Length: 335
Image 1 (cartoon, helix red, strand yellow):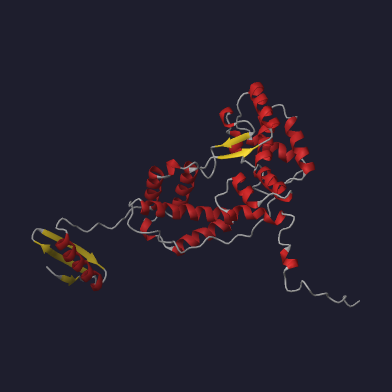
Image 2 (tube, rainbow, N blue to C red; image 1 turned 180 degrees about the vertical axis):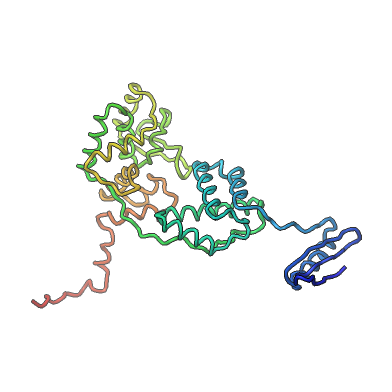
């Protein structure tokens, strides 16, 4: 019963803290062996039934599966994330989950981006991976934190948010209105432009969510219910549309196709979302309050809504009025 060194340089622990309770383990260094022996003795004195846990050898794909079963199924986009995570685990060689190193994750991310994966997509994948470890750690499924928590997302260049001008709105609505094959597309677009709703939120509306001058969105990204006042004429138009055509169907594909047929050229990834940006932009340019806009859009934090602040008529004008050069008159430039 001792700590002995093996021929290959490793150290063998054979300890019996209490009679009938014997532990054996082989470790790389003598220090690790001594710590293991001391832990066994102290733990068994405190709790006679204690025994050391075997090292967690589960692979990343196993953790991904557990994450989905215990948490992912409750998320709106859980199935999509699950598919991304499984592909990511395979791309990383499905390593032992607890032994994943930050350098390996950074290397995989660099390969993704070299193949054309955008920085935003790479950041999303990294965030999904971290969430697997963090959630399972909170649930006590694993006893260690995310091993690559210090890896930071790629810093992205902020893109200006595109929005439609009044003539472009008229052009788009006319193109949608005359498309007979998908009558729902026009009305869903009108709701998005009138409320700042996401396409999916507007498309999922049902009669009981439309009251007297108010539309209530319940299937929101933030999981919070929000109500947006609208013109009575819009409420009447929606009810009339449903009487004639039935409930809304999935028509986002038709919208994207019609949008491409117009003279409007939205930035990549902002097709249906351009309607939400359009509502927000015109609301702020018309003098609307940024905090009110936050509540209408249902943003979780004001920082998201501040992306539209530069469109306010008085935005940052205090930089001129209060800056150190406010009282100076500059001499004319030399000819």
